[in-house]
Length: 139
Image (cartoon, rainbow, N blue to C red; front, top):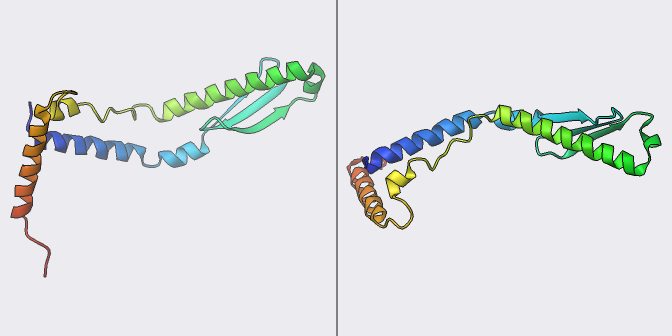
């Protein structure tokens, strides 16, 4: 097992890396949308990053299809638009599914491994000793 402080440093580094990678992603997601047209070409739907419907257009001939067929076309276009938005979202967030928990088992042990409590207490003790060596705030 590695030194607990080293494991904490590694975890802090992973979190910092994830924060850097997420920077600006919010703006990208605000602009992300998916648009698709059903197979008949009569209905087009647009959704945002969350899959919420933001636009729906009908070709002039769409109402002639009848209400049941029109409803099916809307659903088909909507599903395809959601799929397109999800694909874009996956492309933009590729690699951001970093497993923060990776390596935590090494640091704290697996579930039921109570020896991890000892490692945690040791780490807290080390941090306390380190804190006592640091100068205090100016008076």
